[in-house]
Image (tube, rainbow, N blue to C red; front, side):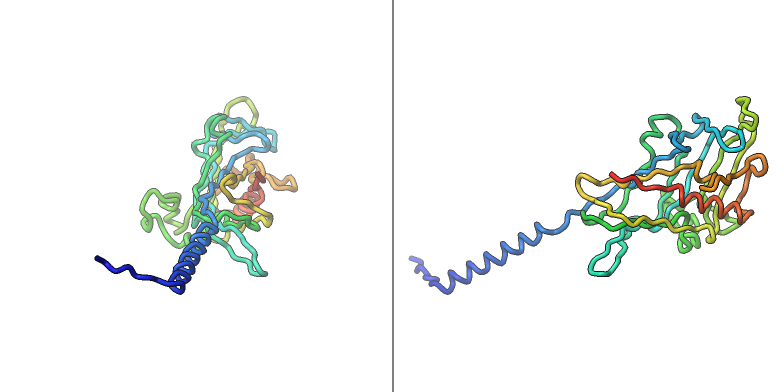
Length: 263
């Protein structure tokens, strides 16, 4: 017959303390922030009209109409800003992405826009968001062979310039509005000097019921600045980053044309 062992009061108290520690540890795990993988949704517009490739016809300065075939641009180093105890940190959620409206060809597509999947972050209220418009210099020093497709940087590369095309705008202009879009337009922007920084400093809530960061970009604003100056397609119909003034004009406008929508 096995002898019963009497633990006594000290052992009972020790067991209670161990149980309490384990319980506290479990509560601590429950208090950890929930991780959320947010989405960045971007809708394209031309002025107030939803942007559609091929199908849409858009009146533009200079008494002409435009029909677009391609609008795309890179954004780099997307980061959420968090300030705590006087220290500001940036939590990066994507290295680089390509926002392309190439497949936005009807009203339903335009309403949906394009979406990017971002890395997980703790559910929280952040103090802003920052990203580069174009290809950051560190990535622009690479080339498509450095990446395994599919990857944002496995294409859109100028071998002659040893760098990526930061933004592309392609389409046709109807100069006399007779319904014939006879004038081909091609504008490809690139080069480290074309890189721009975009940021907004205001509360951004990310949580289970708020997982999407919503933006819109106005292509008309890319082609025309706030002072009413515009690319005159009767004078210039193409540029491959040969004219520094055109590059600056387009990239400055592109930065200004991106707006964040509050949920």
